[in-house]
Image (cartoon, rainbow, N blue to C red; front, side, top):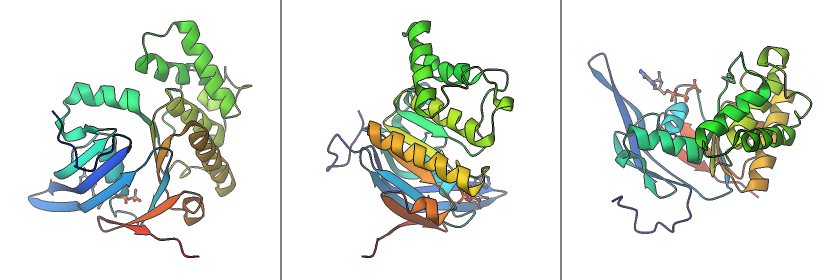
Length: 240
Ligand SMILES: Nc1ncnc2c1ncn2[C@@H]1O[C@H](COP(=O)(O)OP(=O)(O)OP(=O)(O)O)[C@@H](O)[C@H]1O
């Protein structure tokens, strides 16, 4: 059984407690995260900023269960990720997480609709093909791409591709959306539109978001901003 923190209230989406993450590089230890704690509540939109190489992506990889913490606990919706085997971690990712990447990662041979439908089919194989396609269509309409269902990624602009990425991440209605520099390949205006859309969708559906961004203007649209500096995470307290 998972050991939960004493104050776990059954509602918190992310509870990372005193997490360290170290790797052996050559024969030397590299201490990437040094005692990071982070609590994210349902529907909260959290931005993480910080210099290149400070450990932001590493933290996201740990929250996604794609890497394992060296010490400390990462609890997502009551599940202690370090207690899960690879199959359970894969199930956790399919059911509980949406992930948006900097470089869209769409399947080039599939249409926008099929890219989104595939994610739902994998997460919820019990749905009929008709239900899956209807939900994928709705997800694409919700990001303003109802007229682009049959387009392949190469026929879409960068901003449109990222909106497909967002629809794919949200189609399973995950309680937690992780986004790693989702605007990194977009111009500033397009990036701002995509982030607005992401935050609007998340707020409508009560999805918690952890967004990594280099752009302080985008970060300022989140409910909370945290800064990673050399593997240490601190909360930026709003003034005024
Ligand atoms: N698998 C790995 N092997 C060696 N070093 C790694 C590995 N993963 C991460 N690092 C190192 O850990 C540090 C933190 O990397 P990370 O990608 O988490 O930083 P970041 O803040 O996301 O940077 P950026 O903003 O440039 O994406 C970097 O110095 C990086 O080189």
